[in-house]
Length: 85
Image 1 (spheres, rainbow, N blue to C red):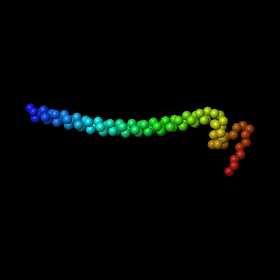
Image 2: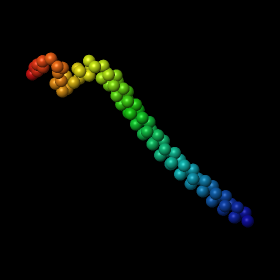
Image 3: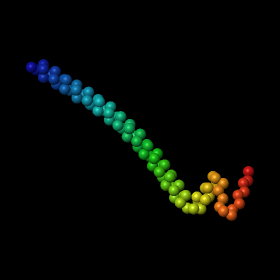
Image 4: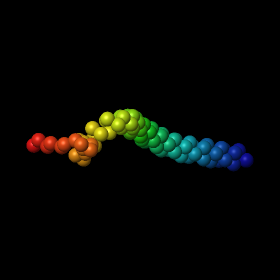
């Protein structure tokens, strides 16, 4: 009877050890995923800040016209366009 109790106890401790190792591995995976998601959040937050800055900049009609002129050779009615190369 004592042998059965010892065998059951050893099996139980072995089972708990196996589960502990699995949980430790799963915890490491989740930590790695959390770090990746944290980095992605930071990148997206930086991009969001840049986009908000651009929105405020282009909300001013003068800034929008300046960018249109620089990138697309836009000219307002009555203006003359001179290109210097």
